[in-house]
Amino acid sequence: MGARTLLSHSFRIAWKDLMELFRNRLGLVLLVLMPMFMMVMVGFIYPSNGSSMSNLPVALVNEDVGYGNSTIASQTFTMVLRQINDKTGIMVFSNASSVGDIKSMVQKGDIYGGIVVPSNFSTSILNGKQGTLIIVTDQSNPQISVTIQGVLSAVFDQMGTMLAQQKVQMLSPAVNANNSLAIVKPYKVQTEGVVGGNPSYFDFIAPGLMAMTVMMSVMTGLPVAISQEKEIGTLDGMMVAPINRLSIILGKTLGQTARGLIQGVLILVLSVGLFGVAIQGSILLVFGLLLLGIFSFVGLGIVITSFAKDQETAQMMMMTLMFPMMFLSGVFFPIQQMPWYMQDISKVLPLTYASEALRKVMVLGAGIPEITTELTVLIAFGVVMTAIAVPVFRRMMTR
Image (cartoon, rainbow, N blue to C red; front, side, top):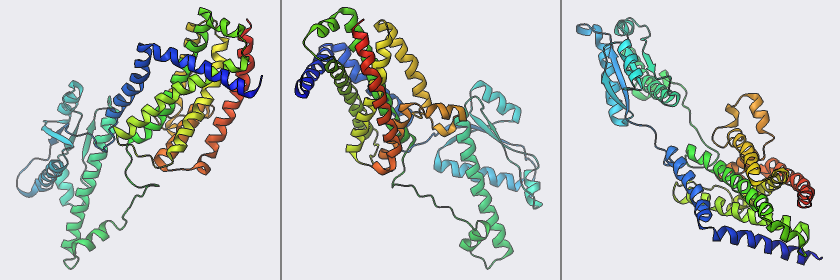
């Protein structure tokens, strides 16, 4: 049997699998809805327009009470704090009577945190000492807690700079505002990215979601394409037909490749069209990485499916493998945040390299020279899995 006949039979088997998918209306709807639902859900959790949290309820306690100029510093502080917040709209202030009152309100869920101005605040400032400010946070919600701390720290730093400028100008009237700022803050930090623009956290997630969806599409489709056909007897019909066994493997692989590519392209279109994700690199390279990722996952999926006795077992084995890969491959969280032993595990997962390669191309505009490591690992993994899958699949068909 020549190569032309082998490929012809493979395409016919792939076409048969795709026709079965297109005839199954519910399956076809789910094929489209699953990536759409995932992208819309995650896209609105991590908005792509750079917007941040706003209108966070925060309580304010001013324990620095008194008469005359003895509380001028705390009064000025609270006034400027409210003015800055009116411009940003990040927080909604409410009054509280004490630190205990703030903690009680946090426990009830009425506020996300609080600001306390201690009783000695103005006295410390007037005596040339540092004034202490207390931030009370909701430790049950780390994300909002970190946001509030970061915003308030930036505001406090800005207010401290303004106060320091005023003192410098009072001590040296000849110093103008710009020079006083240079004295207070001699260093100015300017941040510049590898590419233009200001990518959001969704730009980080989108490439990983593409790779993950392709993996899930291939891994969940193989049990149906192989184990189910084995159970209902249609695989036996292909085995007795004058078709090379390799054609069956190639046909199944091509069918799942098309299925995975459809979902990958759908996620790519949604990312760009609906959430404004900018592809900094080559779009052809993005498609090439999707195909390479599918190639890596198909071989692994065939090996697992071949060892399973039935479709249910194959699906359970797939899910058992997919879930750790989803969370350990840097799809949702940077791998660098994981413990060292988890980072070592992530290095042996193909989804890690598929996600990283797509992220480098889409977000950083990388080319082939910058992703040679990821390409090498994906190609090597796919070749090894395919080399194992062919004899294992043939042995499964003879059982």
